Length: 324
Image (cartoon, rainbow, N blue to C red; front, side, top):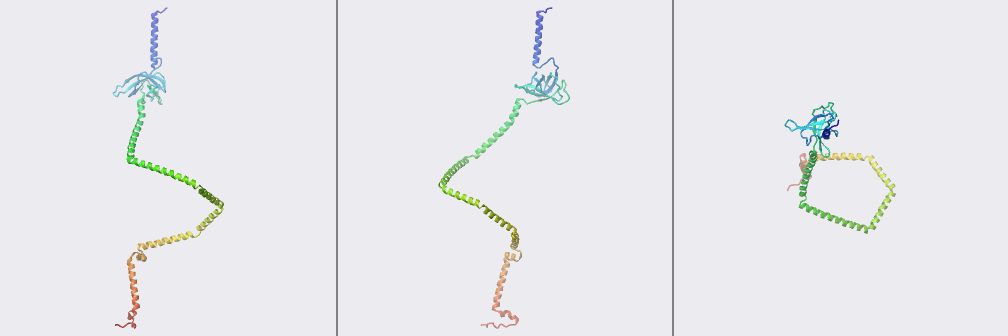
């Protein structure tokens, strides 16, 4: 039985439409011949994620983004349906991370597999996270540089202010004078160097003679090194003899004597003892001087009038001169 031309055209058209629908959905990530599982993830901001964006596990596409809708609450959170065609087991503590893929920054949901023994079931809500978008990443990178740049500009501004305060007109004049002084010093050094060169040229013969004599002295010292060694040995023996002698004991006794003398003089300065009173108190000295003076007068009087002192003992003064 032959089919009519219209029936053939209808069958071909139906098959073409079916292939087109299958191919279109296949390109979008839908596969009618595989088992589908749906999970959910809740985000505060999906950052341009749209339906049919890929679902990735370790860089491999395992599904696509399904319906996207708002939560019924007033926080503006967005529920994303994760449609997975692959049978890969998803641990219960896996994370659905909103990320970018490709050079064009296409949004995708990357499943970071957890380590839980429990496996997520259809309809479960996975833990959600979100990586920084390009603007946020750039801001995080630039923010520290911006802070450092601002601090650097502030430091440069302070440096310029300090530079202006330091290098005022007076400082500039002082610097100019300093450079002139340096120039004069360099000129003086050049003159001195020229004079030294001239002196070396003119006194070349004398310098050569001096060097020759120094060389002879060095040769003489080298030739008499044994004698110099004997002299040094003799000095060493003398030093050993002095060290072994009683000189150290004598020095120690002398040190003790000086210490005692220092103590005596200290007591005298403090006015202790007769010598101290005599040195520090002039009244004792005056009394002694007065006593010596009276004693001197008494001796003179005794020499001139001895009978006066002997009268109490019954002796007459035969040498007494008559009055008048």
